Image (cartoon, rainbow, N blue to C red; front, side, top):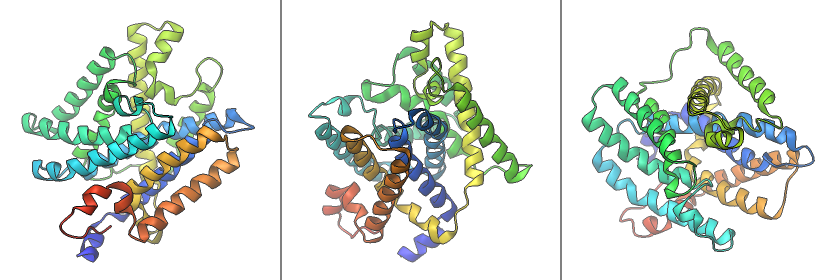
Length: 327
């Protein structure tokens, strides 16, 4: 049974997820690295422009066949993981409950994933056209972006809606789009965005990823107009989408390495807690950030290969599951 599921898996997607997980851990650690924080900001900003948008595209792509029955079956494990993950952050932050009602660390993705699946099911029911579904997701993101001032509070509702178009686009894609000019064109897109990131990382504009995650910060700091703020936000979404497709096209790990990406959720949980805890007590250098992120991913892979991921992510569900759960 396990071998059959593995044969049906898209190992190429697993490889992309493995690379993204490593970049998530690295991005969390290198953001304030010493003694060259500017280099850390450039690298982190480049990563932030595509790592979560691409992750969400893939999540949508893997959820395109979701049904109400599948949603109900997977809702509790996802909610359980979010609650356990949030409680870990509460403990690390000295008992602050902000990680429950306004998740801003990595646990926001778990709550948003549950919301995206539910919203997509509702969208499918009332809008049959794929183009219509994407437009509705974009309009919802636009409305929520203009109604809620920040990404914090109220269960990170703004972040959930502003990334929902990526989820819907991923769900409506039948496969990886064919790029007429091949890999070299994707490489040019990556180089161009990295160059733009370097240009934006200065005393005035700070990190490029803030354009996607915290656009309203600029409106408050630089007194941007409503039109300028929304154009900045829309432009950031477009850049994130194009760069996500380029990275998706470029990353092609050998199958022997790509297979470890099937443990991506467990590694995601592990890196979130470990990187947050590390940053509270220590500021790693750039090189240390590289080594620590590799070590965290390697630990997650090791636990996954030894059947520990089910206990790491959903121990309660695993404990009361009638049939043994396999990775």
